[in-house]
Amino acid sequence: MRTEWVTTGSHGTVLPAGGSGQCRDGKGAGMKVLVAGGAMTPFNRRKDGSSWRDWCRDAFVGALADAALEKSSIDALVVASESDFFTLQVNPASMIADTLGLVGCRSCRVEGGGASGHLAVHVGMAMVLSGQSRRVAVVGFEAAATHLDGKTVGMLLSHSFDSWTDGFTGVSSTSIYALSAMAFMERTKATVNDLAAVAARNRQNARANPNAHLPLDIREADVAASPVVSSPYRRLDCSPLSDGAACIILSRPEDLPHTGRARVRISGTGAASDRARLGDRSDPGRFRAKETAAARALAAAEITAEAIGVAEVYDSYSGAQLQALEALGLTSDVVADERAGRFASCGELPVNLSGGLLGQGAPVGATGVAQVLATAQQLLGSFPGLNPQSGPKYGLADSHGGIATTCAVSVLEIQ
Amino acid sequence: MTQHRLTLDLCMPKGRLTPYFEALAQGKALAECCGSCDRVQFPPGGICGHCGAADLTWTALSGTAAVIHRTDTPDQAFALVRFEGAKNSAVVAVANPDVQSNRGRLVISSASAQGLTIELQGKGNEHV
Image (cartoon, rainbow over all chains, first blue to last red):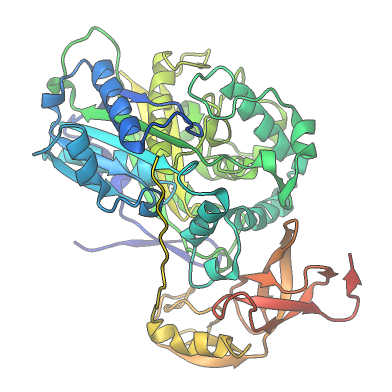
C-alpha cells in the first residue's frame, strides 16, 4: 500500500497521511462500533493495599455489567499501559488476560505514551470493524503513583521525549511543556492567569466526580500561590501521577443485547504523529499532529468542529489544554473563548467536565480509555459527575503522548 | 506489599549518530548538513527535517547558541536554544542557572556525557 504524506506548516513539517480516520471507519458500509459499556476505578494514590491487577479486574467487571454482557462473550482484549518499569510486568496483556479469565482470547498491548489508552480504543475499534472480533474489551491501567517514588517516575517519564537528547539533559516533562507553553503564550498573548483559570476550573469540575484524584475547591489565586515547578508552571498547573484502571467494551449493535438504553457510537477516529523533539518543530507552541488527528476524526465522522458539544481534552498541564483546544479546531480564538467562559461547565462548549487529567487524574494507560468513557457517558447524561446541560449529539475525546507527539482523537455520537 | 530494587547498567550503541555523541563528549557541536537542500540541523536527527533526505554529512558548528525560551525550576534551568548555523533548535540544560543571558556556549555536560548543556555568557550577564 502506498503511503501518502502531507506537508503542513511553513517549515514543512511532514506528517503521514494514513491513520484510522482516513478509512472513514466503515461509514459507507453502514458499519457501526458502539461503546457497549464501560467502567473505571477511582483515580488516586492508592493506599489500600490493592494491586494493579485488582484495578483491571474491577474496571472489567464493571464494564461487563454496564454493557449487560457475560465474560464469555468477550473475544478480544486490548491492554494499554505506558511503562513496564512501574509494575515490573513485561507482556502485561497476557497477564491481564489470565487475571480476567480471558485465556484463549486474542490479546495485545498498545503503547503510545499518554495516548496509550486512546490508541488502544482505536485498535479495539479496528478489530471490530475488520471482523476479527465481535466484542472487544479495552483495558487501560497504570500504577504511576505509589509503586515508585515521584522523582524516579519523573525521571522515567522524561524519557518520553527523545531520550538521547532531551532525556539525558535531565529535563523533566514539566520543563519541556513549559517551554512549549511559553512559545504558545508568546504567539497568542495568553497569560499565566489564563493558565491558572484552566487549572482551577478543572479541579472545580472534578469536585462532582467521585472517581477524581484532585477534586479541589481552588481559585486562580491558589494556583498562583502554589510552588513553582518549572516556570511558568506551578504545582497546581500540573496533572498528578495517579493509580487506576478503566475499561470500555466495543462492539457492533447487532452483537449486543437489547437493553432499551441509548448507546454511543464512535463515529470517527484520527491519529497522527509529530517530530519528537520540540526544537525540530517549526512552532514549538503548536500541536500540529493534534490538528491532523482532529481533522481526520472529524472527516471520518462527516461533521465539522462546530458540531462538537462536549469535549474531554488532554490537559496534562493547564496550558496544554489551551494548546489542545486550538489544535483541535474547537475555537478560532482560544484565549478570547477561554476568557469569555465558553469552555466552562455551563458554557457553549464544556471542556473536561470530568476534571480532566488535572482533576480526575492521570494513570497514563487508563487515561485515554477514561476520556472516551467519560465523553460517552456525558453524551448519555450518565457521567457520575457534571454532564452537559445542552444535550449535545457529538462529543470529542483527545489524548496525546510525548508533547503532542503521538496524538489520538475520537468523535463520539449518541445513537 | 513486597519491595523490589531494579538496577540497570545500560550500554547503548548510538549507531550512525556516534560521531555526534563523541564530539558532544568533548564539548563540540557536530551538526548534520543535508546533501539535498543544504539545511544544517543540530542536534542531528538522521533525516533532514526539511526535505526528508537521508544523505547527510557532518559539519562542525561554533557551539554558540541564542536562547529562545527559558524555564527555571527551583534549582535548575533549561532552555530552548538555536545553535549558530543550525535551522532547528534544541532543548538544553543551563550549566549556570544563576546567570541571565540570551547567549550561551555548548559545554561538556557535568551530569551526563550525552545531554546538551550550555553555559550562559556574553556581555550583559546579570546575576539573579
